[in-house]
Amino acid sequence: MDTKRRYEEAREFYKELGIDTEKVIEKLKTLPVSLHCWQGDDVTGFDQKGPLTGGIQTTGNYPGKATNYEELFADIQKVIDMTPGMKKINVHASYAIFEDGGFVDRDKIEPKHFTKWVDLAKKNKMGLDFNPTFFSHSKVKDGLTLSSPDEETRRFWIEHGKACVRISEYFAKETGIPCVMNIWTGDGYKDVPADRMGPRLRYKEAIEEILSEPYDFRLVKPTVESKVFGIGVESYTVGSAEFTLSFAAAHSDKCMPLMDNGHYHPTEVVSDKIPALLCFFPEIALHITRPVRWDSDHVVLFDDETKEMAKEIVRNDALDRVNMALDFFDASINRISAWCVGFRSWQKALLNAMLTPYEMLKKLQDDNALTELMVKQEEAKMYPVADVWNEYLERCGVVSDAGLYAEIAKYEKEVLSKR
Image 1 (cartoon, rainbow, N blue to C red):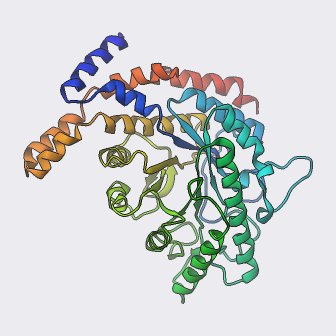
Image 2: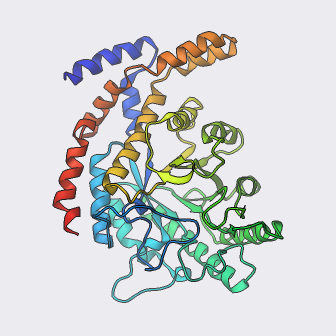
Image 3: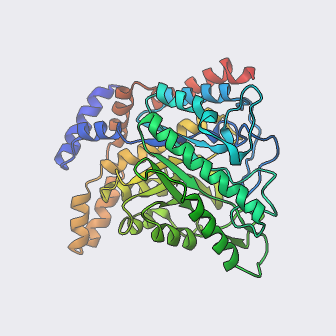
């Protein structure tokens, strides 16, 4: 296949539409997407050996799972080397690295427990994002953390959140890149509660206290993430969409909303919510996943909703206002493959969005030429995006889509199968 010839033909095609593919490729190279560390070990982390709790669950037992930070770092590095574009690494607090018997509980973690993460980020010239871990811990009392009526429980988790603010600022200062710190809990009730407001008031006060920890909002970007329900909390979730969005709006000088596209009712789509929030917030954040019937965190694919989310970011000129991070975990397939396919799929969605002639389509909408609009939007689905994608991969120096599986299989044979 003469990929260069095909790219030049695609370049001329898009030029007639007023789109410069050279500028698109160069821009795409600069857009940071946060690569989540927890895909590599099924959200196990390094600070506890118990089961996952708080609505978190992985399915499958594919061989080769990372069992320590050396293995996880090696896998992350492999993914970095096989995927195009700029990246960050998204770390959960449960991935603190304790050496020489220096274990501390989550309310006492410090920057020194994450120096190796900083070293990995610096090695790859990328930033770090961070997440307090409000799940899978003995101090989750009756399924509650920041909203618990027990003051001792609530205090432990507030101190954990404050510690994470300090670590986030350490990340930002060390890498020179702002750190998004996401606050999410699985707090809720399996059946209908007698009091819906009380837990939410406690949750509100707890987050406010966490955010009272001094930080530079230019360096540390706290977010609040909602969820519609979880395993064991099917009837009531404290951090609902309405709660987190209202909290972010009321505290817009110190935090922003984060939307996970698996955390809504199946008939809701985050692609429609993105432009709504951009009307009011200078910045928003996304956890990009693929829900199948519910918040199942399947590997991101180049599917319709993924494309639509990217389109809303691009056509609203919000690439510098949306903090993009992946969030999925699949233990039923090769974990390196899951990372690579998910990351590449979001990059494809961004490229597809950047190669769409929005000014022409918007004018058709404003002129009420809706018949022509539908025809043109369907036509755009068959534009030669793949030819530009292949050129992008080559310029980034990473393996082609056609060669991806062979590279993954080689790593599995040489590394993962020996664990």
